[in-house]
Image 1 (cartoon, rainbow, N blue to C red):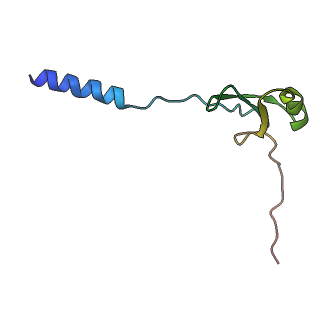
Image 2 (tube, rainbow, N blue to C red):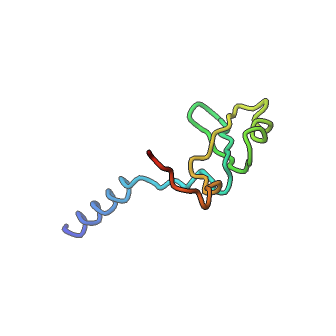
Image 3 (tube, rainbow, N blue to C red):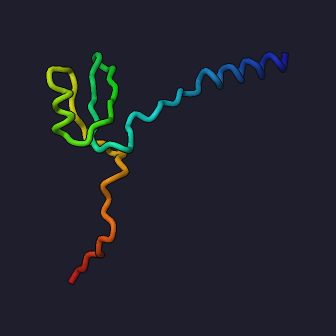
Length: 85
């Protein structure tokens, strides 16, 4: 009986665990195209280097261009610290 309770508890714990989602943004590109397939169903295509390039792909589709919040490039090197007088 004790093993049956432990097995039921283990099964309940596995079922209650939320699934992990894959990362949708590619950190190599600054612009992503968000394509809508339904009311709450959409996906991202991150492979655009500019908003103009992305807007050309979004034209005529249920989609919009968004700035990639996880973009790794474009950081300035050698920037001098700001002086406050």
